[in-house]
Image (cartoon, rainbow, N blue to C red):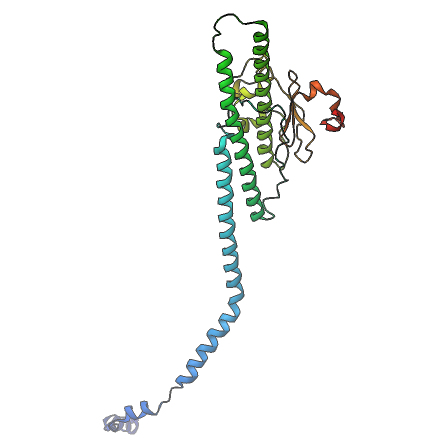
Length: 305
């Protein structure tokens, strides 16, 4: 045991070897780092990662672009609808429409609107065309309003002196003509309101006048000027059938049937068709031209000849 401890003591007391100078630097210099291989490995790794992810990134970019385009188109269509409302269908439509020619030509044909989700560009083009037609129609009504106002002022002016029988008769005819023209223009406003309602309700007309109160703006146009037995409703909350002179004959109809009768005045015999046009005095002067088929009323112009 003593010999083992002696040997261990001798080993501990032995001097430690000193490394030669510069040995560490020599060892470090001998280490070779494959820099080119590391760079190529990183390039290959990045290229493989890009090849794996570019289909998903490209699809996401296309989807985001389509969403942006559809959003812009939706905003533009909303602006067009707001412009239609600003034209008078929520308060700007003249309450009484004015002197117009006795024979009213058929109104502008309105094509069936395409589905909003099928082709947004075609939908916007259709809305622009419809807005232009409605602007021109309102311009005609406003011009007729001025003429009708002048005529009413002339009729209401006090007459100087005694009128002859011929003058009284002419004055009566002028008053009746002005009332008939006002009735015709009321029916035209009803036709315009029904077409605007149909554009937001899958091409279908409303079931009654009250359902399109937003488009009619005022219940005053539902009373014919010659109907002295009806009282005009102050607003839609007080409106009832007692405040309406006209008949609504095409509930749930469509402008796809242009000769179907939408509304009718029982006093003057004026009829408003589903295409927006109004025929003056047809129901009175040519009752055979108004026929009923499958529960619907139609105007058959060939029967008037």
